[in-house]
Image (spheres, rainbow, N blue to C red):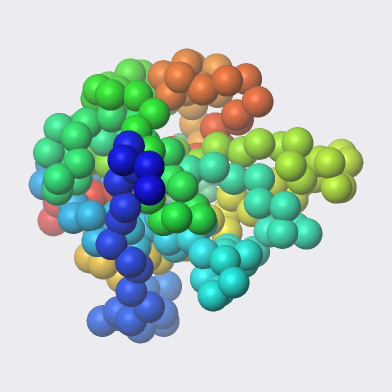
Length: 205
Ligand SMILES: Cc1cc2nc3c(=O)[nH]c(=O)nc-3n(C[C@H](O)[C@H](O)[C@H](O)COP(=O)(O)O)c2cc1C
């Protein structure tokens, strides 16, 4: 086992809110308390976004054109944002349901700046950033692959919304940002294209 990996608690497949209630209650929220979220809550959110959902480890919680899986998920958090996890940028390892530290330090302010200063990006404890590697899908589907990638990020985003709602947390899908700046803040190479930033935290009432 790689010691730099943070293994997340296994996701649960039972919750206290019905799917119908989660759909009915889902709302974009832009006001978060600075309270931390637990590793179990993060585990659940990441699993809903892109986790493995069959025993042979091939298929995921969201559909993907030809199972080409172009999406990669990054977690941006500050100090005391997630219980027991230090500030930084983490990549979600889908197969092992774990995190790998990609960069140490809190970059939420820089991330907000890259997204037209939408301040809830640094007020929320955690930002989930969904990036795409278009070539994975374009290799199979050519130009049409781009359309498929954009459809897929919507599936992942909706799952994050519904899972957050079911956990008593909240989120908002953010599409307004400068791609190049977000990529720089995340210290990612050019082949990664950020598509959504989704701040997650407890909603302030
Ligand atoms: C593709 C997309 C991009 C969006 N970008 C932003 C954004 O940059 N900032 C923001 O505050 N909300 C953003 N939203 C959230 C919408 O404003 C929100 O979904 C809409 O107002 C309807 O509200 P509801 O989600 O509570 O139903 C985005 C939503 C989508 C689907």
